[in-house]
Length: 406
Image 1: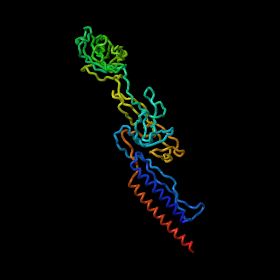
Image 2: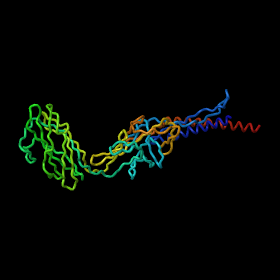
Image 3: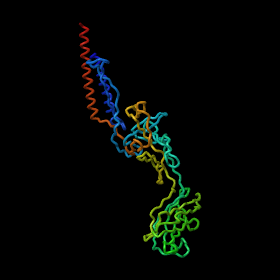
Image 4: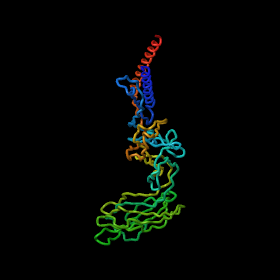
C-alpha cells in the first residue's frame, strides 16, 4: 500500500513540476495565462480511520488575471484591458486568445501569427455595424476622390460694414463688403474654389438688422473663373443678430476640366451679424481628393479604420470579443489559443466595451501573467516532494525484498 501511495505522490509531484516548468517556459509569451495543478487526497471508500492512499490530480486551474501591458507602438498590436478574448478562426473553427499580435495578410485579412483570421462585425453602407461576425478585411487599395456636394460655412458679419447700393461685380471690391474662398473638390479630386462675396443691403426696417446678399464665383484649380458670379442667397437676421433666413442655397458648377458637373449645397447656419470683425468660424466640406492607403487605426471600442493620405478614414469593421460564463472550462491549445467546451459554455460575443467586455489598447501587447519568482518556489517545492516520494519508494522496495528473503 505504501508503494502505491508513494507512487501517486511521485506522479503528483511530476505533474506539479510539469505545470511550473510550462509556466516558466511561457514567462515571455504574449497573452499567456499561468496554471496551477490542483490535487485531492485519496481514501478507501466506506472506510473510517484508514490511512490515505495518496494523491490525485483533479485539474489544472488557469489564472486569467490581467497581465501587464507593454507598449510596442505597432498599431496592429492590440491588448484587452479587462475581460474578454479576441475571436480568431482557421479552417472554419473558432478559437479565443489574449494574444493580440496581429498583422495584415497579402489578401487584406487581419490575422494572428499562426494565420488565423481575426473576427469582427461587418459594416454597412452607413458605416454602422451590421451585426454579422466574420473575418476583418482591410482594403489597402487607394480611395477614390469624392466630389463636394455639401459645404457648410459659419461666419461672423460686421454690422458696421457700409451698405452697398452699387451693382455687384467680383472684379470691383467696392461692390461688396467681405469675401472668402472655400474649396470644392470635383469628381476627379481637383481642389477647385468657390469665391463667396458678402454685400450688405439697405435696412428694410428699424426692427431688424440689414439683409446680406451672398454671391458665388466658382474657380477651377488653376485659378480661372468658371461661369459667372451669381447671387447665391439672401441672409436675414433677427434683432439679436441670429440668422433667420437664407441659410441654405444650391449652386450647380460646370468645371470645364473633364470632371462631372457639381451640384453643391451651401449651408450658412450659425452665421451671425453684430459689432464684430468679419471672421470665418468654421468650414466643413464633404469632398476630398484621392488618397493612398497609409495604415490602420483601431479604437478602444474596437472600430477598425483604414486611413488614407488625403486625411480621410473609413471604418471597415468592429472587433468582436468573447466572454465565457466559466473561463476555467476553456481548453488551452497551442499558439496561445483556447477552445470552448461544454464546461466553459458558449461564447458571449460583444463589441469591446459592451457587456462585461473590456476595451482595446492599440499599440500594446499583454504580457504573460507568470510570476517567475513564485514558479521557482513551486518548482523547488515539487522537486522536494518528488525526492521525498522517491525515498519512500526505495524504502518500500527494500522492505519488500527483505520479506521475500524470509
